[in-house]
Image (cartoon, rainbow, N blue to C red; front, top):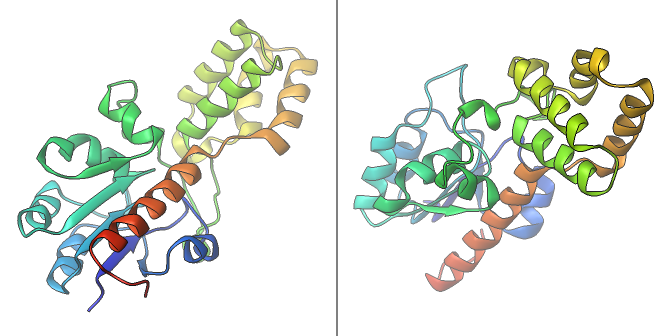
Length: 221
């Protein structure tokens, strides 16, 4: 039996996750995986990453079933943020900025957190739109981009299908509307200054799970 089950994939590297909180880590959750963890006796379930398009996504009913049986369910960063924003009034606990943006209606579309990744290593092969938004906003705040350039890049990112979203791809799409100097300056900024909000929220969720496990008297695995 595993008291704490965490569904994690590309949002945070496993070695870093283990350093924060040792628990039972499983790949991104698909339909039925929450039910399986519940039936195995999980007392805390943390949903960070889940499948979107390649399989059936985690269902609301299985989360509600877990909550009804007294299991604590935390959601953050990716699929977890989506489900927490939908079910927080029914007992699911949301953590992090992305969850709050969905909860408050500032984010609506699922593809804000969608990306493609290597199924074996979970390495990113595209960039989620929410990370892109945060990076562009940071670049504007640091004087790298003007208001107009910010709007152009966000529009270019939104127009791309989620597997095609990379910083280079966004700049290619916006190149006719931006100077070469602006493109070069922004890409250079992204190499060291890009924001990974999903990673930050995943870390916050693990810290919350660690604290909750302590409150419930559950030791690290």
